[in-house]
Length: 257
Length: 370
Image 1 (cartoon, each protein chain N blue to C red):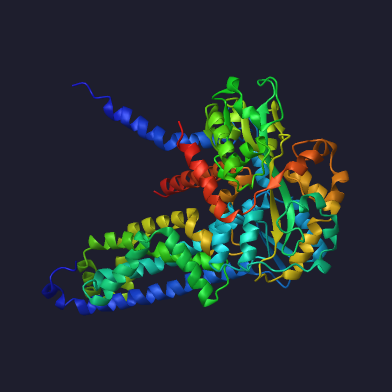
Image 2: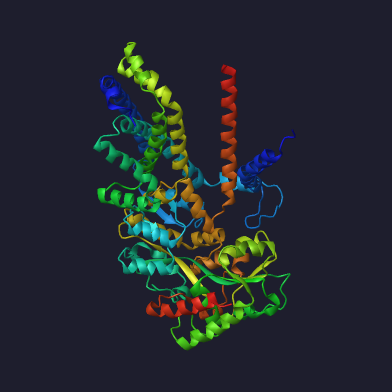
């Protein structure tokens, strides 16, 4: 029987759909034109402009700082929340808890941004990196909790009981049995939290204060007077770093085996 | 989701114990993560003892070296944050965001903020350089006494075209009636700007509230619409750079950027006069460093600084004593420096109150006409 070409064509189309925009972005980062997408020759002008723009690097630093700390905190809180929801999900308190955790997933971002801003103003918290951090944790916790909850639903708690029967302390059984079993869910939640924090615009716009401009805020404000192609250059650099890191970690993992 | 209750009755005690242990471990690692995060955020936020001036402005709207110079001269730190529209900035401040010391909204937004008591009255004794502000522009401004706002950058709309492709250029808004350019021209998708262009072509004020003048403008616009490819504010730059459009309604600052890519692009200000807009320097009522903010306004209107800033950002800082210090190519550019007689015929967009409804009617009929 002749093999159908259909899967190959679909795969190629999906790959093009995913990667063509990225390829165009990388190519345009070397194109000196700002307005026309016509190729005007290879140039590193946007890279030079990028390295001459301290504000962009400050924004990148803010963004990464917030993303890393938000991920760390929301992974812990989200996992604990998922555990409580799963074990005691039938109680009325936990049903309220579930609604609260679910809320940020369905509430429109703009509503959440404005209400957080009003809450911070009412509480007298000065706007800055700390308020952005709190706001991001507020919605990232929900995403982590939902991912870990999914994992917990497939988890067989008799394994934990077996560990306890075999003499493991509560601490040991949690650390050596429960957490490793949940790890895929926790990691997925962490990646989700990191990504959401890095590219959030609407909520961040409202709760950011002086000196806490993040990369999305900076990029958006560049549309009117700035030079957005600089962002092509920055994205290309970030892509290169990510790509190198992934390749290196895969090499290391293979070497270990 | 926990299975049957009976099956759980016995092991639940142990599971509870492990839950408690898990909670303890979660709490301790949360505490650690929280401490690390707090320490990092605190370290990032620390400003030492130096006073901090917080600017909230458009992106790329001030030459970065000038900020460094101000920091050195004053022994302070300048924090620069950016917004992308007047409305977004207003919404945020209105909701209670504070901590900004100096803003650069457009004039119409300044009037609104001032009416709502959001701005601080300026102390002229702290800003001696106000003497250098161009009185010709102040005469057009909504706050000519500079009680609350000082003009920062002036821009104006006009006509941009490709010199090699358009014959017989006449410096008039009536260029949009040229049938040989049908389908290759654009006008702004902006009610006051576009109706204003037609009013100017007829010799009326852009702030008129006379229905007869507006009716005349409407019939002229309906005539022009047959030649216009679209009403549009952003993409015209790309269309002009690539030669898709030959003649467009444009803002001068944008055109200077397009010209860097397509040297055939020219800009003219119609001799009937243009619509001028201005971004102003204002200090919010709840500024933390009003003294430093006054000092920064004074610094920006130092003639040498103003000239350097104008040359860097391609907009005009209306500071009359900075004009002789400008490079010749800027001083001789009629797109930046309007001829005095054209400037006298140019206007700012004013708040016309209830008469706005008349403009909305004209605009709606224009947009829906075939």
